[in-house]
Image (cartoon, rainbow, N blue to C red; front, side, top):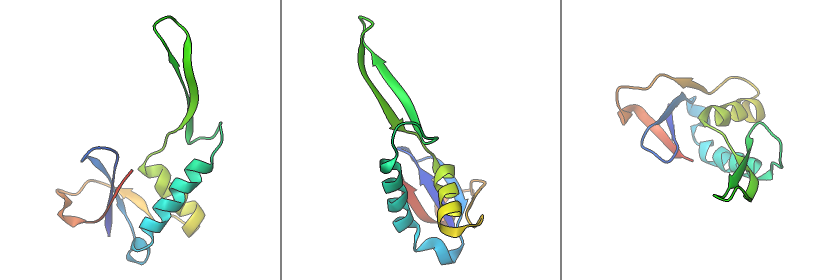
Length: 104
């Protein structure tokens, strides 16, 4: 099955998902989101961000979550499958071949 992952736009990345895992993708997406929320401070999926106002004063400083479809697939392959079962593929000619769509 082909899965498309998009981030706030109609464009996205495409992945091959073996049929036996297709039904679990929504559940795994929720688990991945919960995992991201559990992260504290320094982690490869976080980025430190500051906002400085026009007077040069710090308005806020936070760690934000930074991840992509490949990170989600790597998490699945390591945490759920313990193998490389899901991987990125080239974009198909159109989305008619896409069986599953996930929006982050």
